[in-house]
Each structure stands twice: as structure tokens, then as C-alpha cells.
Picture 1: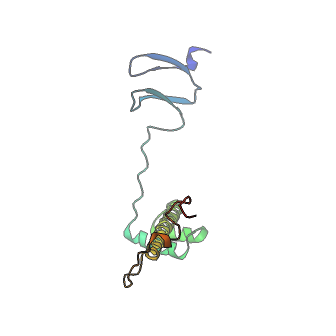
Picture 2 (picture 1 turned 120 degrees about the vertical axis):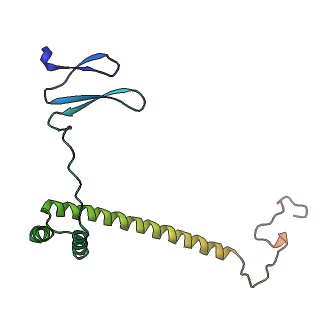
Picture 3 (picture 1 turned 180 degrees about the vertical axis):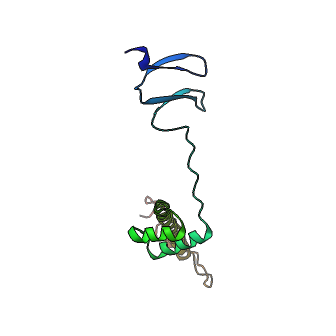
Length: 161
């Protein structure tokens, strides 16, 4: 292995480490929150310097039409997707991704609603059990002597048995 096959990296402490990586790799040295030094290895093809694409902002009118179509059909494909994209001035990819994201949101919302419904059902069941265990408020509560309780409070070795 010749020197061109090695990457020399200086870390923030000024130490020089020699590590061997293939030509298609790029490394970045960072210090994590614990103060440890980490070396991250990425493919050179991954352009880390390129700015991220700006997030698409949909107009209220576009959102209205997208939501209306979603209520009719959660899966927009083919000619329908092409036509909707054209009508809204969006690319087919933007429409496709919007529908993917909307389906994910729909599933998350349905799941949360089911969790809330389950919690309400459990609370209702607990309340009903508590009501059954409490004497009715319009009746006088009788206090039974210990010998009439379902489980006697006296010991089995009691005199007279």
C-alpha cells in the first residue's frame, strides 16, 4: 500500500492518525457531547456540501384540492395523479409524496384515536366496577357482625370447636 492510499487526518487535539480507506470514502472528524473524538466515514458520492432542497410549501388552494382528492381516494396513481399535478401546478413527484405523507398522517391519527378510545373504555369499566362496589346512596348500609361476614375473622383454633 503506498502513501496515496492513506488519508491523514488531524483531530482537534492536533494528533495525526493514519487510517486506510478506499478512494471512494470521505471522513469527517468530530467531537461528540462527551468530548470523545469520532471519525465518520462517508462515500464521496454523498455530496455533504450541497444545500438541502427547500421544503415544498403548498398553497391553501392546493391543500384544499389535495385533501379533497384524499377523501375520495387515498391512492392517487397514473393519469389521475398526472392530471391533478397539472391542475395544481405541481410535479407528479410532489403529488405522490404528498399522498404518501398524508396516508402516514392518517394512519397515525387513527392509531391515536384507537388508543384514546381504549383508555376511555378502560376508565368507563373502572368507574362501573367502582359503582358496583359502592352501596346505593338511597339505601341504608348495614354493618354486619364479624360472625356473619363471608370469611370469619376468628381463628380456626377457637375454643368450642
